[in-house]
Image (tube, rainbow over the protein chains, first blue to last red):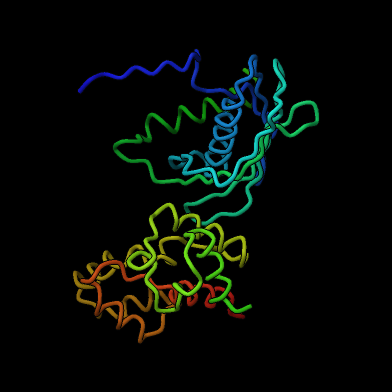
Length: 146
Length: 123
């Protein structure tokens, strides 16, 4: 099979700069964007939602984004700015979780959407021994600013 | 609005189907083409609408086949075992389910209605 290389131009996968608050139903974080790459804001919101889901399930299962129900993006994007990201758990079942996530810059909502996540038990593909400790560490670092 | 009509509205929105396609006897997967992601959306929407805990494995009868196998393995009567696992289903429905297991996914709209009505009952 031919190898396909995708260059995102990013030097990291994790976009979140920090998690400032995390409770049972909500989470807040920040992301600094140095260019007009609003799509990174969407990815950062997805990362924030998934991180909250891992947090409330005590990192006991694999969490992932299933889909984005709706998402509005303000056309005029603020360059070189810090975005305040926030998420609220709207509703849930045992394995599905719906979040309202939004990104705000200078009191203006830049991105707002409803993101659907799911959890599945760790398995051979998503190994508990790798993922659980990894995400615990990442969450702790983001929360403690380290 | 009763549970059936509220559930019907949620299904219309998520599966983008016409109102007249949804009857209590309609199969969600066989007739409406619901996929697993649709069922998850449905579960969280039902949680929003009814404010009741939605256990995906139960409401979507996900463990039906393993349960029947378990019953067979330990020599229990299947319908009694399923009645214990799915207390929201009437005995007649359990008999029907067991009779059509070979024909594909058995989940019907009326099963969701039964689950919600059972969760809403006054204890």
